[in-house]
Structure formats: structure tokens, C-alpha cells
Amino acid sequence: MRGGGARRPHAYPNPRAPPPPPPRPPPGGGVEGWQAGDRVAVGWYGGSCGRCDACRTGDAVLCPQLAIPGVAYPGGYADFVVVPAMALAAVPDELTSAEAAPLACAGVTVFNALRRSAARPGDTVAILGLGGLGHLGVQFAQKMGFDTVAIARGPEKEALALKLGAAHYVDSTAGDVAAALQGLGGAKVVLATVTNADAMSATVDGLGRRGELVIVGIAGEPLQLSARQLLRGDRKVYGHSSGAAVDTQDTLRFAAQSGVRAWVEELPLEQTAAAVEKMATGRARFRMVVTTNH
Image 1 (cartoon, rainbow, N blue to C red):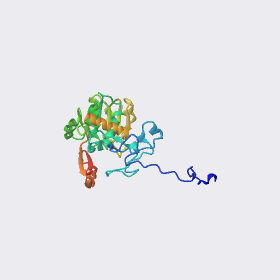
Image 2 (image 1 turned 90 degrees about the vertical axis):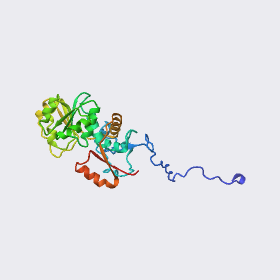
Image 3 (image 1 turned 120 degrees about the vertical axis):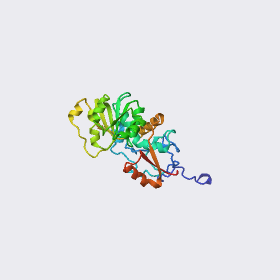
Image 4 (image 1 turned 45 degrees about the vertical axis):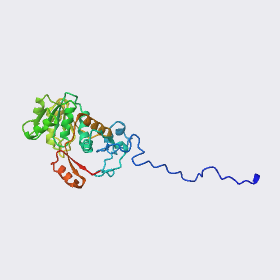
């Protein structure tokens, strides 16, 4: 070689060498729009495909590939879980974790059903049932400006209904529920939170013009109603299933602003079985929240 100098090594990278691995993001990082330490809630909606017609038109909770935490992937009964970022809903500072948890499940179900219904402020809206869903439904209906009717079994529930914000109470054991609703001018919406098909069917004739029976409770038996009942006033009967993460976030924000809160009983994680048993037997008042020391 000229001048006797040493030959310099090849300056180009080896094309056969594998590319270096990308840098690993820190725990909780690498997700746009969220930062480590953000308070978030995850409800029934745990992610969806993002590509189907349901997802693209704002119905992600009806996605054929809907992911339910604890079913599609591990989740629940833990301090930390890994979920798709699309399933996250921000928790306002005004809400404690115990307050936010039931609002991300029962809360979004009734709130989203009411705001997507035909009812507008000032309309008569009846909440059928005063359980875990119903006690939140009455609160949301009242705060959303509806003339709120609570329907439940027995005169002893009236004080509870009024405390939750109902303007009227109908004891379903004391007479004709439909007649009572018609006496109030007819319901624009009846939100059925119970699991009794006969109780749902009994409200149909209480619907006003273009009234809606919106079902969020699951009944094992078929509803008993006729086409004539629906044609009289062009009424509708349909189901409503929860909501996506943005709906949960809206629910939490509205609850924080309006003061709607679930009535909860807290038990430590070690007593999970007792909490589940209390819910399953209908003795919870009205939602059980399992807590940890973290």
C-alpha cells in the first residue's frame, strides 16, 4: 500500500447484523396521552379492535372483538393490571378510588343509557328498581333535570327513593304501575334496572307518546307485551349495554360535578369471598368495593 500505512477498517455497517433493539420505555411510559401516576379506571369495556364499523362509528362497546377485563386478559382483584390504553378513563381528583370504581361499571351503564335516550330535561323519567343500578339511576336522572319517578316494591322504599332525589314514588305492590305513570302524564323513558321480566312488561302501558322502555337489567324470562301496546303511541323497547372508555370518563366527570355517588360498602381484599356472597344474595347496600393496603 502507498506510503506503507495500515488499511482502515470497513466503515459501513454489516447488513447481516440484526438491528439493535428499541429502547425500552420506563414502567407506565410509552403511551401517548397518559403519564405514569395518572389515576384511571377500567370498567366492563377493556378494549376493542378499533377497525370495525362499530368502533369507527362510536359503538366500541358493541365491537365483535370486545375485550372484557378478567375474561379476555387477566385483571381485577389486584393492585396493578395491564390493559390497552384505549380502555382507560381518567378519574377526577374529586372522586376517591372507592367512589370511582362502581361508577365505572353500574354508573356508566345507567348514565349512558339516560343520556342516549329520548328524554330531555323536564321530561318524566322512571327508574324501575332501587338496587345497585337503580339507586344510581335515580340520582343521575334527577341531576340531569328529569322529573324523576322511582318504582320499587313496598312502601318502605319510598323514603329511600326521595332521599336519592326522586320527585315521585310508585309502589309496584300497591296498584297498577302503568296507571300510576299515566297519572303523571306518561313516562318519556322507563329505565329498567331489575331482573324481573314481568316488572318490566308492567311499565309499557305507562309510556307516553314515543316513550321508551330501556333495559339494562338482565331478565331470564321473555317480556310479555303485544304489538298493539307498542303501536299505541309509537313506543320503543330496547336494550342498552354499558359504554366505552370515553363514556366512563364522562360518567365520572358528571358525577364529580353533580355529587352523584354510589352507596358502597368497603371490605379488604382478604374478605373478597364475603363481598361476593353479599352481592350475590342481594344484601349489599348497594355496591361492594374490595380495597387493598396500597
